[in-house]
Image 1 (spheres, rainbow, N blue to C red):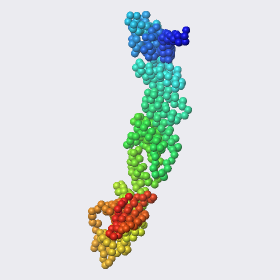
Image 2: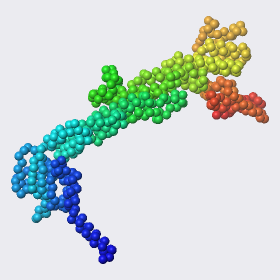
Image 3: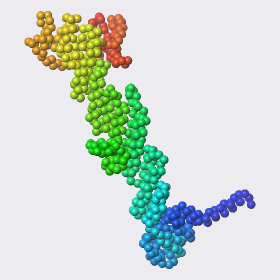
Image 4: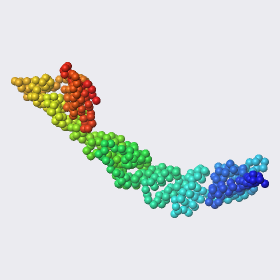
Length: 539
């Protein structure tokens, strides 16, 4: 015999063995994995073999399950369309509909239809009785034993549509879960979250899952309060996405359904109870109260998170206020206090502001009915401006007078500055024109203020229409076409000035800085031959 012939012979023998043994293999494997406690195969597992039934004709089975119809020598098992036939009448005495049937799969000779040939029928306790017996056996057992009982009762209850069995399976799962919690070596947030996920897998009530999830967050919060690193409040910007407290708050808002829902009024008694014992109060609360408590939890975390980035001097008050309105809308009044605190800070430091920044600050103060802060900010700013403008002599005094009048409506103060400038330049038309507008009169060679001249009471300033150029000067915004005098009124003296002279032209670069940052670079072109000078570019 050749080697190839030998291989073919072995293959034929192997194929024949496999074909002959298939029914036996299926019979041995399936019941072995899906048998009831007494060794009988459950009806559910028997039905799973339905595609292989034709190959299992003649194979013996012990099947336990609930019967639906019994007529003399034939019966039908519930949820099974295979006929069960006996050679003699089947007699059942008790009320239990759970039976164990022994016999084999068979085929009708004429029709070829399958049926189960019954040798013996034995009545078993009801499922509820069996469940109670198993419960008594594991009263002091482990979580694993309760889970195994639930794994038997749950699918069986669904298969037979037995609500009591389904509920008892849930009870077994709940007991197993509680035991599993007791078996933990340490109750950690991670362990509680794992158990809360198990609640979903076991199809238990969601209120229990939320209860344990809430407890896990409180355990984590107690630890986080002690371990979270402090913010560097000297930094210009805060990356809150990397802060552990803000990260914790975001997770809490996603997991607890009531955390992001604003509540109007919370009973002080409930809030105090929750503050004293958060976990127990939440555990005993109704679903509606739990949503309120979740919001209280959110508010506590949000308050702590915001406090971490609050600067003591109030300099970031608006940012803090916006976060309060976003995260703790119930505390809008507190947000408003932080906005006012920032205005107070800015008013105290207004001397370092640009004219534009001052205008914005004053408008903010007035929008919030803080006229006192607006006046304080202007006064501080003018005091510093006076130091620099006085160096410009007459031009500086005139500009300082204009600013005092425009910003404070201080006619006496503006007039005093003009009189001071008049001593330096007695014939300056700009000074004389401004004095007249303020109501000053020249009497016997002396300029007398309206307050000192009863015959000329201090009349209100005439209403004038402001040109675009005048508005830009008032706002401190340099524009092409301004004269050097107008530029001085607009921005004051530059921090540095460079001058380049060419044939018939002098080009000056006026540089204005905010600290080390160049705010404006203005080019002034003078043509002495024409007697002109104006701003030709602004950067």
